[in-house]
Image 1 (cartoon, one colour):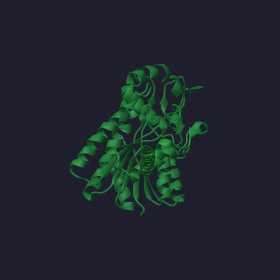
Image 2 (cartoon, one colour):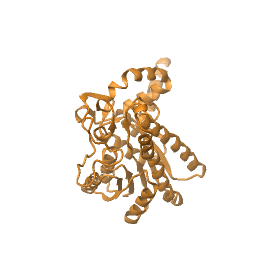
Image 3 (tube, one colour):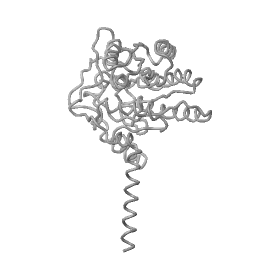
Image 4 (cartoon, one colour):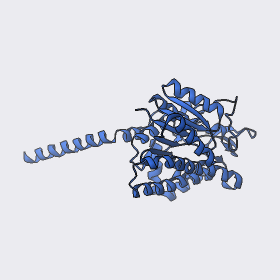
Length: 335
């Protein structure tokens, strides 16, 4: 049965790919973001794939705008079944080169934007005892890296906030679910429009995945929200596991390699525009779409995600294999 879905940050990148994914299911999708051109492009994609779309321009840093967006979506499509928080912004620079105003702006969008979206969703879902919230996180929510202190801080905060809310929902035995998908480096337009003070152009830290990989993880999490977290991409799993085993070693490694790995060899344009305060895909401007500039270096598949999607089948297969091995060993002993 088609669902009503709200996606923040739907105009580009992961949010854009997620919108297309839900559209392919025939869902009704509320598209929330700041950029008019990107929102119109997302709307066209959803409808071409068989879904229904509603464009709702809003800045997630402003709760009143988020609440109004939720009201507009429900007025058009009915009760919200799934809410996906994706919208974010960032600054690439050493912490001491980021102004307090810039740091606050990243926090308001990338952390409080999730708080506002979650609040607006729960205000509608809890009385109905139905609904799912998916937080699009990052491997950087547990393993911080240099040059992204504001973004890493916001993603860490999303983890802590979400865990608290999950426990509160469990306490009241609510059927509303909330889960997080921790993402790897993804080929999105953010590297073309993020505010950067690096000497060279910013890039995602390889290995890089296509936004459709991230979108498949979000759709899977929306369908199976009882897990606390999903990890998309083998690099996410490797990073998070390594950080739990040997964080001091990662600190030293990132101190040596974390600056160069986030930059290309091409000098940055000091006058390039950034989207921290205003969208670059505003009215009559470019529609950036889901993909960034790194298609030739990006993976279109995630084996870790395939394992998550087929966990039951893998468990049955593993169990059958172990049982057969035990049976054969027993047979050999009897001989």
